[in-house]
Image 1 (cartoon, rainbow, N blue to C red):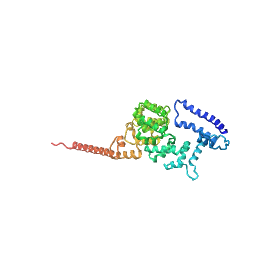
Image 2 (image 1 turned 135 degrees about the horizontal axis):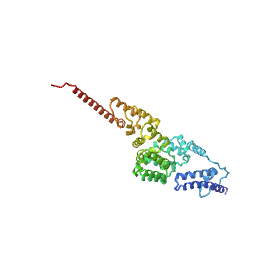
Image 3 (image 1 turned 30 degrees about the vertical axis):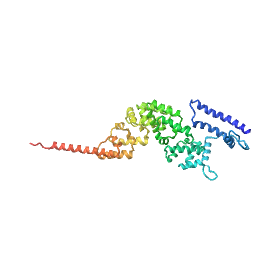
Image 4 (image 1 turned 180 degrees about the horizontal axis):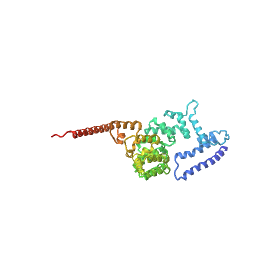
Length: 405
């Protein structure tokens, strides 16, 4: 009776807190995801466990019947678990050993997959719930499902480190329906292994979150086919907030005269960059060197990845070398892909061969051709140069010959 009264009082307090959490989600006008429900329930359950310990476990295991054997009830003072204490408790759980000195079964299973204990602890610090996932009901079914999709066993540690929440999601109720939903949006089902490796969090987002991104891409003028290709090649785009990230970035590029649909299709990762920290400095760099807004817009339209490069480590060193080359500045407007090639491994060696041969090639010929085709183009140019010189010498000799009487 005493236990029932204590539990009743605790439930009243905890359920009030829990209800407030649910009401916040309901006010958003959307259904709760599994992860959101879990995040709301865990604090409530943990507070009950802290207050009533093993007695609560007995009650839950035997519900709706009371425990078969009463245990002495000692009053346990409620304690407030800070986020840090929760992390410490979770980390202790994954590293604790049993009577035989063995780690918990789910930890041994993860180690067999190629993870080490420190890596598992690192995951648990970021996501404490990972320590409590059941091996047979949660972790193992998801791992086997991922293997069946074609994800190599060697890649699984990376996938689980990126998104440990995958192991807490139901296959039948969440993962598989989410994948079907995404396939209907155009995600290539043959590429799931690559998609999940690139961005496993995609499978943990709500449909509403994905639909908001898809609606934005459609608004920007992309076809359903193009949207599917973007979600397949760069699923990370779903993680970007439309109003805070995607739309402002689109407006910025539009101010440069860029076709947003083309840029999104060619280089969607550009839309994950900071306008102030990444985009504006690159724009200002080229403006300061005499290029117009129209020139810059053309460059980014032709080569969307241009803005993804570091100014200090990539753009500036390559610009400085470009100034030593015998090309006008407008050559970079025609071929901004120049900045995508390795300075030491491609640009300098190729240009040295052209310089040594004493000929002129277009910048895109120097860099974009395969080694075989570059060698062929270089030899053709040398041959033409020699033929021209021989012809010029012959004509000069004829002009110098005395007339015959």
